[in-house]
Length: 422
Image 1 (cartoon, rainbow, N blue to C red):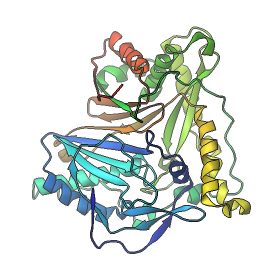
Image 2: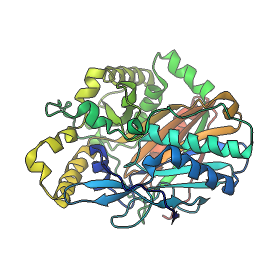
Image 3: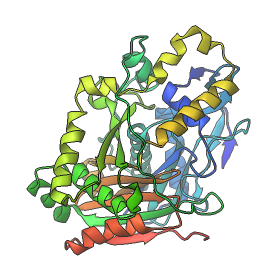
Image 4: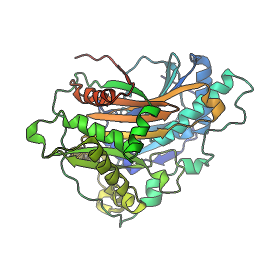
């Protein structure tokens, strides 16, 4: 929901090239949106949350835009539309961009103790959106407890110019951008997808103190340990005739770790780790292989090589003058080919560390992302490790396999799932 109030300044902004891919491939199932949630230790007051959101957008006006269609590319312009906080009553990761529809491309909802931010991936990546959510939460708690949290900040302190920066163009805008290595077609789950463009969402909780020592014992990162488990979970759903195809996990990487950017917009790339299950391999061996492959790709040189070649599009004169609908068809075609090289996506959102006094009011963080296949997020907070799994399939075998691996090794694990129509 939204309402109109005088706020916009009439500015317009170019859409970065990664967002152009999202806009070309928005669908009713994979809406190209994601959700971040902060669970407090008490029920949410909707009136205070409304005030907090209105205050937060003064800090992050980058979200107060409408996406418009131009002749050659999409663009964004400031809008007077204002968000209206409501109790959660829609699907997770809803459709937040519809061509020619007047709407905001994010929404804030609540349910019980939980504050949700659903946002179009066109506006921000996980890092930028998480900072926006934390600004909302801090402002909410300041209003809930007047006089407290006055000396706390949760934002980067970046200027509005830095927050709005197209960092892809800033750091990769070159005609000589190198191409990454070619990738093979990966195994993709075979099965009937849920009807009515549904996704099923699973939230998996386990103690960090039980799982992290297992990764350390193998001398691998937690991402690599769980990434290897996801590979094994997918392997157990593979028909024997498909075992010559690699299982490939795509892992988004925050490029702010490699370049001096404070943008609130998209600035990430994806690294892919693959394994062909043509012979027996133990979890220990697979985790070590996963870790070595993942880390070898995380050097600045390799990250730059892996950047998508979309950044070269605007430098090619014939491409610049091609109408938008043709460009979108081309982008959809190449994105579809690229997607066939990935089995699932696993996004580690890292350990959330709000200031101590603020953290005393927060129970947990979690999140989900829309998909046409399977997508898992991971959030650490205190001793809570939370995975948010989105699945397009009626068959829940991969999630069951993953949970079974963990529970059979003695990890205390709880799982909840949304209801779907089958």
